[in-house]
Image 1 (cartoon, rainbow, N blue to C red):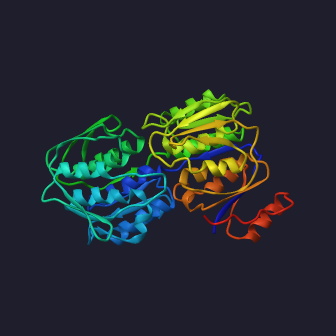
Image 2: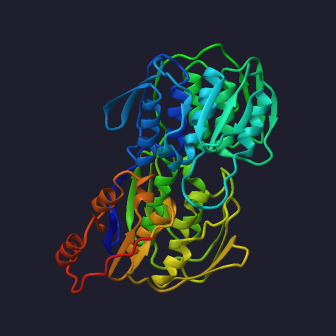
Image 3: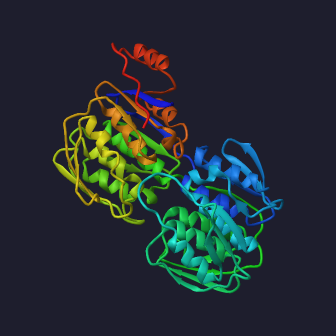
Length: 444
């Protein structure tokens, strides 16, 4: 089983380039099949979630051409089925975007219900509400798939009961080819919602208001091909910002949109770190005397739930007592037990939505297991700060959302590698000056 193995204690220094946003790219890949003409996507991250989505698109008949590692051309005129029932698509949450895309284009879709990280219930009721409002009929099949079909899709006024990124994008996909005018109120405002809308507009859609809580869509008869660069990944950028802060490093994070990172920068400033913003870069300098702060996750432009585990790791090393309130997903504190094994002092309330973090002077290396994507990244950050060696197992989660995570950390001076067996681990420990190898991490 692949693991990250690292020796902590080295401040990160240097420059790192951020890739395209995974969460935007998944919606954009679905949108690309809504025209028969070629769509060229640039700045596409090479991570497992994206590759699963590309395989699904190819397996239903679309032509997928890799022009280079980060550029793909999709030509969807050859799609021969609207059923996406492959077992592998259940592994990613964003497979549900194919429902909105196929329903919008063909007025029928059947897609295996999605999986993804185990961070609590993430119902699709708001997706269904939007599809029903547009005139679709839906049912869950015996095979565990969602079947949707419509005689015609007709624009309607849709008010989301809760702010949902997935539902906003999915309903937007279906509505761009619907008859008449659709209004989505209480829409999500995240940068990846805006990016999907921008791509659709480049394809000939008529969407206004993306990035606000009211999105207005005038349906068009068809979409056309385009070339489109995917927005930089806000969460990858934030993760490296937290890694710089936690290790007391000095890192220039390039290819970002600083506006998207303002709430993350604000929290690091509160903790005593130094932040410099440039046109397309952010420099983070850590502070060994970090101060406590409180965090509450909320929809954009609030603090992202996908950055909650990473900032918890930094706060575990801050002076004083901090509190994190998770308002988006339950079960998002599954990593706390692993951090506490490394010497952190974190308590989660009985209800499971508030963590109290008492700062400690340092962490110690241990064998830990990643419970989900962002928690895995947080445990890597902890290992880079810890005394001695840390192994993080179940890194399949981390590989879903971070491209070349260990390589990018190495270029910043981190002593970290990916190992697949005990021999590789022992060789790494020998080269980095350790005396005794860690016991192999146990499979979760």
